[in-house]
Image (cartoon, rainbow, N blue to C red; front, side, top):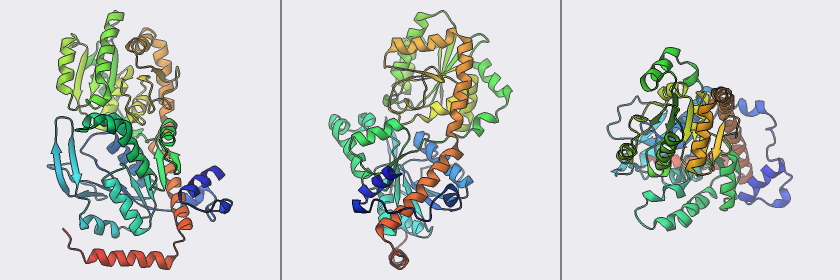
Length: 452
């Protein structure tokens, strides 16, 4: 506990001689924080209908927190032509621009809008949780300072792995700037959530010295527990014969996801064995046409099926219908699809990386290999040859996934929120009069603004 307090204190520049102070007085047990109901604001640069790991992570955490009685408001972009159902707790923010490129579509929120500030001011927010170290994250940080509430950051994305999106100075961005961005922003936050221990170590290695807590993305076990057997059987009949092994992967079809490695691995697998198998690729992205071209070039049209984007609650059917989940990305901070696949009783074969290391337990719920096509394909082949091993690892994978339920992750987040709030108030010596005076003054300024 002293180590935890010390990390909080060192960042907040508290006198080290006061390290023995009880910064959590009146906050001694689980029941204390479970009885508190919080108003939580989350800020994100992307959200549904955009499909990606960050929107899924936010959605799952918000659902878990809401089920525990907290109020979660998600400040997210207002996408053009979005016809999806609107949640009253999702604050859609008007855009400055919407860029469409070959690689990616960017929704750029107008973070200078007084409407966002006014909406935020009416919600009586207790804690701000930002999900990117720039733009909407910067707005969340600014509002935290203005309204006197702590700011939490989740480090979702290995920025250096996305250097190919940068129009110029890519090497500088990859080697220097990406680390500078997360370090500089992280130092301004009160708490940083790292999805895995290896990611936490990475943050420490690049010099992020503030308090860090491990908070994996929770998975919604309801998706895989309430599916009819007939739905699973129909998928298998559609894509694989009775005795064929069905492989599956879920990934955005973009350069950083390393799909070219996966295609080479599948080709190598066909060369190594006469065992019949098929592979489902779920997801969409800018590399789709290149991938289709490579599949044809390698003669894999009857082996690999690109299914496009599928709704998260529907993807679980494909996990349950599959025998093995394969993964080639090295850009993940956690890889939530691995946990979802485990919930669907799929053993994993993946490349070792920071987002994989803590999730896949070697020989128990899957295998991790170096970025070697031979090693990777050999592990898939090992499972394909041994139905008993697949069965054992499938059950182990399902058991592993239950440790990451959205309720358990929400409980962890809840506790960290409450500790951050208490510690923030204590360290900053915000008395009620001063705090109320600041908020009242801000509200007056907001009310004087012309709302867009």
